[in-house]
Amino acid sequence: MSRTVISRIRGSVQGVGFRAWVLREATRRGLRGWVRNRQDGSVEAMFSGPNEDVIEMMMSCYLGPPGSKVSEAVSDPSRADPGTGFEIRETA
Image 1 (cartoon, rainbow, N blue to C red):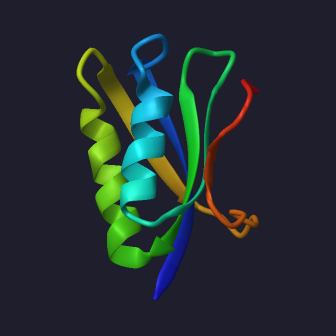
Image 2 (cartoon, one colour):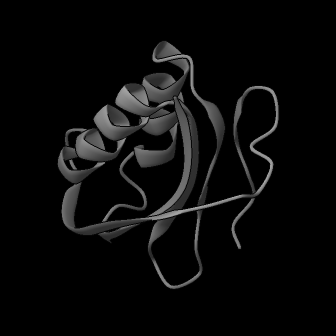
């Protein structure tokens, strides 16, 4: 069973390597999707793949990489096309 979600991560998550960390973690899990900074200071990501791997990635986002301080991570189901790999996108 597969799942696709859009996650919004808030806190001290920009300028600490959060997007690069998400790219590495999502790629390691074989997930498809993307990650990008938002102008409001949050990070947004789409994760798509096996249900268990997506859940694991969402839970990892609560911790984040060293130097980050996550105050909130919320995920909602998505029907958007995640693409074929995982990428860092430009700020939205």
